[in-house]
Amino acid sequence: MGWQDKFTAQGADAGGTRMQYGALCWRTAAGGVEVLLITSRDTGRWVIPKGWPMPGLSPEAAAAQEAWEEAGVQGTMNPLCIGRYGYQKCLSPDASIPCAVAVYGLRVQELAKTFPEAKERRRKWFPLAEAATLVAEPELATIIAQFLPPIQGRPGPIAADDDDDPTPAPKAGKRKGH
Image 1 (cartoon, rainbow, N blue to C red):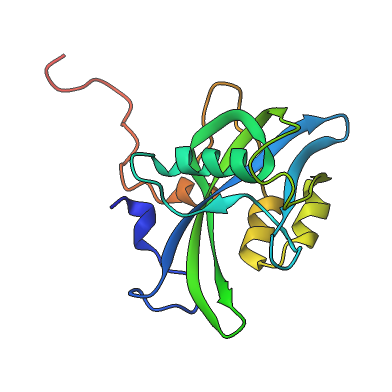
Image 2: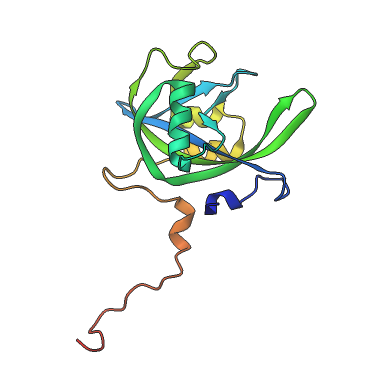
C-alpha cells in the first residue's frame, strides 16, 4: 500500500474510504492552460477521468488508463500526485461510499475519436478558472484552479509539500575530511 492510499476522504472514517486515481488532462492553448472535463455517466456532471486501482498498474498508470477509457486521451503522465480530494460515490439511489481520489497531471497529446466510453460521455476543454467552477467537489475545484504545468522534463510536486521536507539544507563551507 502506497502513501497515497493512507489518507481518507473528508468526513469519512479510515476504514470505509475507497481509493481511486484520477487524471487532470491538460494542454496549453493560445489563452493559457486548458483542462479537459468529461461528463459522469449517471448525472451528467462535469468530472475528471478517475477509477479504481488496477492490479499490476501504478496509481498514475491506472489514472492514464481511466483517461483513455473515459475520454480517449493519450499523452504524458506526470508520476507525482498533484493533489487529492474526497467525494461520495453514489452506488444506487440509497447507497454511497466515501472515496479519496489521488490526482495526476496528464499532458494531452492526442484525443481519439473512438474510445471505450465515447457513447456514454461528453468531453470539452475549459480554461482553468472556468473548469474549477464546473466541478462539484470543492477540493477538486481548488486543484484545478491552482494547477501549474510542470516545467518541461521535470515533474511538479504537490504544492503543499514544499514546506514539508524535514531534511535540512546543506550548509555552505568545507566538509570535514576534505
